[in-house]
Length: 579
Image 1 (cartoon, rainbow, N blue to C red):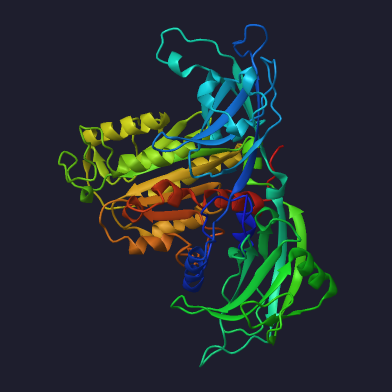
Image 2 (image 1 turned 180 degrees about the vertical axis):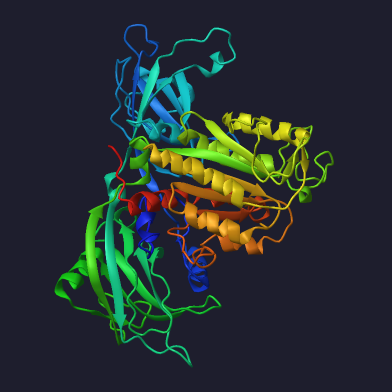
């Protein structure tokens, strides 16, 4: 799974990260470069999964012989519509087929990818027809099954047996036995192969009037038609004409192969987003490896067509490869296959600024029509994704900023009303506990995150002490800017050493600008009151309003970094999956 960026903690962990992942940037220039990359087609991180299929006990629909089965794979969209992804070959005279045809699809951690499998008996008269040309309505329907891709890849052996049923029998009181379908998923080996490079330049041109240039490198692959797709970048280095960048970690899968051409461009960063091209060249990974082994540099050229067979101006500035190392990295999916889980936790803001829950203008108003409010929506959408990675589906759930009946204001109380335990059963258990709490607490304040983060960190530390193979994800939903900012920073810095990530959703119309301080993507890494710096970025913050009307959902925006944060923790402690 992967792409590349330049940060040992963030870039290395990006291999095995997730689609749409941020690049763990450290300052405003690098955030601006990230926007620049996206404008040019940067696609983020991904992993390819190869699915194989077999069935047993299929119904025999032929009179003189056994059925001739074919399986058709669909993806079900959010609107329920089916998109056909592929078909297997036809297996003649078999009720227990093992199909040779595989299907490869891209796994997105932050999306629930619902798959539908339909099995047909292909009539003899169509055996000479290419399966792609078969009209399914002319074949005999044997049955179907449905599951999420997440369910397959979280199984220990990445295999899942599904009961086939007939769609017309779902509403029947007597379910028909239509056989079973076995689906096996395998992560493609190429997605684990990583190239680590340390790149440097010499004698870059002066582009700024009163200072040296602020260079960064952009690596793009060449696709059909000659267009370039960015796949990797370095960080911006200020005021340096001989920069040495942090290591970049590049995934072979997205490049294509070590022989595939890459366009390497050197830019001078400009705050307005119009970065100056200082030179470019075309090199494959094989050629870059030769530069490393020979200790030689390569001159940049000045033209947009610079590279092989170019007659354009050769510049004085040169590119050097100080390190070139190829390795196989364990991916996020490897850890899941090795028995690691993601444990979901929720903390909900009950401060008075949310408004009276009994009034329709309150952020906590429960609509009798069943339409979820912002809190319910965040719980449902994040929980829908994470529940597949938690086997017992018992979720610690807290509230903060409210006064329980006959008690003082609490900044971390069990949402289920118990004084002994904080867990609830399933996503619906969270929803029920939330609705019940609204009837049993008085909204108060202020908005303090420190106590709930400390509680979540305590659970994570106890798991580590007990040798648990768990990684914890705390979702905090709030309508206001945190009041105890320094205490929150202290708690986050301490928690950065634990298997814990924190997702914060801002709801309502408050100004959340100060909240972005907690998200290291937006600024410098957090520092505690004692001067200790966070060992890694564990916070992802998003205002719900920013994504409500856009193409990206709140879930995708929030969960984009989670696999990268997971791998940062595992690799920094040299933890290996038990495969």
